[in-house]
Image (cartoon, rainbow, N blue to C red; front, side, top):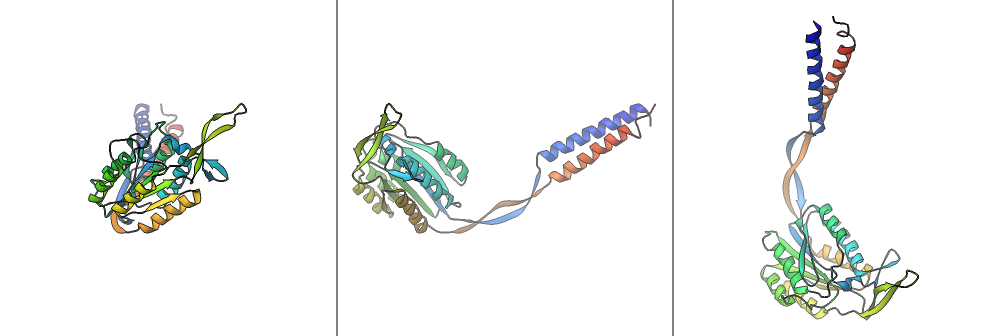
Length: 287
């Protein structure tokens, strides 16, 4: 074999090796079939109060004083982890209501959004708007059971939707609402600044949860009202809701795949080694 032909062969082997390795590194997969999966048939939307009063530090977490929002987020993450087969969405409200995450089975995505939540800095609590936004996220979903978890620490004093009107809409759509009032009884310490030594300065503010309205919302929709005045109580509430809302159905999805990476990378490596060996031995001294 003359030198020019040998060089063309070696270059061809090099490119063949590169192409095979690139294909292999893209991780091609071959679907094999369907794997049965258990699904709850339950869709849940969490409506979380982000008004300024949620900064009141009347809870403890791991031995430290923390605000209501911190505890709500921490306990919600555990609830979400325990509902791995449910679609769960997230709405938030203060003087208005906002969609934070649509109902999804991607709970990592949901937890990331939950971690990023902060109070909205608005003076007002639109419970009716928050509930209405959550119910609307469930309106088009054809699941066996649809649930809203409404979490607030105050009274409805903002927005154009009365809470009981939103409850009637939920009732008409067969959406069950569990309401949770968050906060100790009496007064709660609200941080209002820091002193000359960098320590937080607190002001005691009254805890003013409209338990009557929250109870009516729950009763009209077939849910229950809970009062959470400690981290332990809030955890037990989520555990109780978890027990109350259990139903299963079987669904299937493509889940079994054969990895084809080795079928491309291994020949690519062999061809690369062959090109090196030929280039440094048999064809090295061609005239």
